Length: 406
Image 1 (cartoon, rainbow, N blue to C red):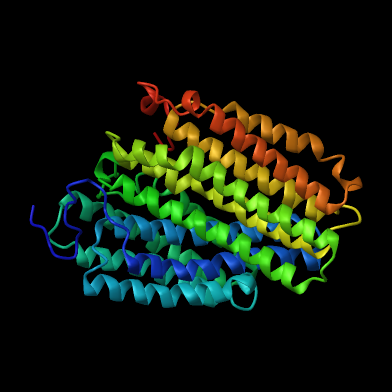
Image 2: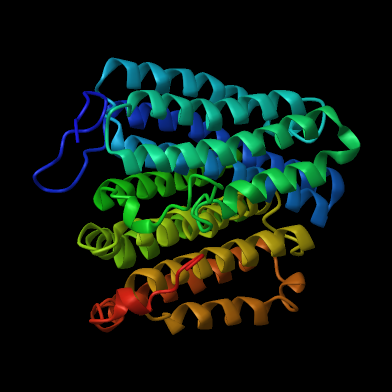
């Protein structure tokens, strides 16, 4: 095999360093996450609690995540310190900004801008990789040829949906569905075969660090919402209490992921015999509900800070209890993937949140927020206390971990 300059040099420690240009690239997704949370809030403000608005926002969030995670896989192999790779990332930043700008009106007047910028990111990045990896490992190049075929088909559906408003939803659902099932299907293409997880020789530590940084981005958006809304609201005892509870909730979200899960998971994938399989399941798929829970919780914080007293309306209850519940499920699934067994504390937390649902309407929003925060804190404390038992790797944990598409 001949190595070319655009691929990363092998690291003696097996950990591809996250570069400053990758962090710079992530700034676009700070804006994208902000757009998503504001889009969710706007749907609730205009339409009340509607499945349509929530589904559209969830759909767009999945699309944004898919762009970002695919890019993180690519920079796992390409060297961001090389000028052509940097220029590619800069071009992707521009397309990413256009995509982010279009998010609030992606299903409306800016549908074509969204579709063109999204497909430019997905297809353009793949074509660049095929050029950058020419002469490298044939299996790796073949993998990206398969990916290019899948993304080209989905690109046609994205653009067709943008041009035909009546067919937009089914075409876009089909397009994103193709991209989501692609990894689990091995990007099978007649004549090119199917990729296996053994073909994806990733730097597990690099991918774990990249996903942890995206969680930080989402948490940063939550703090921005908290600070901006509190700054614009009248200073009262209730608003100050709501601010403190929202801040404590953000700390609990951080603690549950970074104190009890992230380091162990990074070590597990870094020493895995099949890092591609674990990376596909634990990071490509399972991190989505983790990020989604944070975004929904950010919307809840804005609702509570805007109206901390009175009664908890339906949209605030859904976002408060649902956001924390989605996050708890996501982190629980993450632990299931890397440890090999489900942490029952997370199931108990979700049941407690669900049980409170019928009663929170009579509570002030700040009390509902405090309840959700208390559940998070109790869960984090429970996990920290039992971490020695919960995160001790079983000898067959990796073999028993669930898989997608295998």
